[in-house]
Amino acid sequence: MSKVLIVESGSSKADWLLLENGVSKLYFQSKGWNPLFMAEEEMIRRLESYVDLKVFFKSIDYVYFYTPGCSHTESKGVLKDALEDVFVNGTVEVESDLLAAARAVYHNQPLFVSILGTGSNTAFYDGDVLEQFTPSLGYILGDEGSGASLGKLLLRAYLYKNFPPDLYSEFSKKHSISKELALKSVYKEENPNRFLASYVPFLVAHKSHPYIVEMVKCEFQNYLNTHILSHPMCKDFPIAFVGSVAFYFQDVLAELCSQNNLSMTAIVQSPIHDLKEYHCRAIDGDNV
Image 1: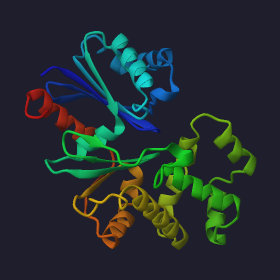
Image 2 (image 1 turned 180 degrees about the vertical axis):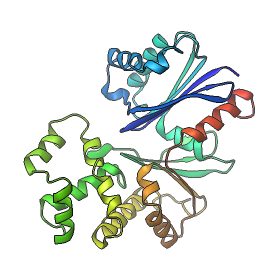
Image 3 (image 1 turned 60 degrees about the vertical axis):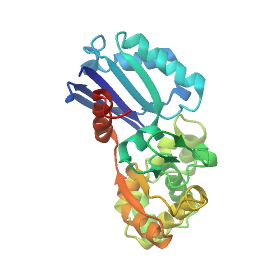
């Protein structure tokens, strides 16, 4: 087996894993990639800034890059061109972060795959075909159950002063953000979805507070209603959840799945290590 680079990116962060003969040689994290919002020159500059990886550019044989934004054919092509310009001797495959999640949790049984991270996304996967029944509409129109959506609910409740007094006080001590700064960050600055999702740690730190419990439960139920329960086969196949939001609120997801008669099979915070196993099997010819 040769040198294999696997990159699994979400909106906020990306995991990079370099394998040599199936053994991990280099691992690091970077900020997230999304080819929809990056020019090819910026992609190449960012790749060249990864000093530890740069020494392997010419010796890497396979690059598997999973990222949001792959539904847009032109953007996907730009990322592939940038990767091929840098990894000149490598075979490059660019796929969606949703396929990364599906490959990570698939174990020879068809299932629903749900990403709950900075954004959210859902599909049905049978080991070959990844089928989306509801589209991913982004943090303004969609992303139900995501960090961005939860952060939006949290920030809105704070600015409207709908928080219980104890929670309002705790949030003010930790963040104390003004309406003007909030509006600027959401409507003027880059990556507003990341800004909104940056409040998830506050939710996690206060996850036992009744107000937060109810907020998260309602948002997750909204997600299930929109993307899972609307599907006629939702009771026939299990669901695997992937992403940090799912991981940190897995007790809430487990409760809601039970209440809705849904079978939850796994919760994976980060798929990178499961993708390692998948690609090692694939290159060895034990998987397609």
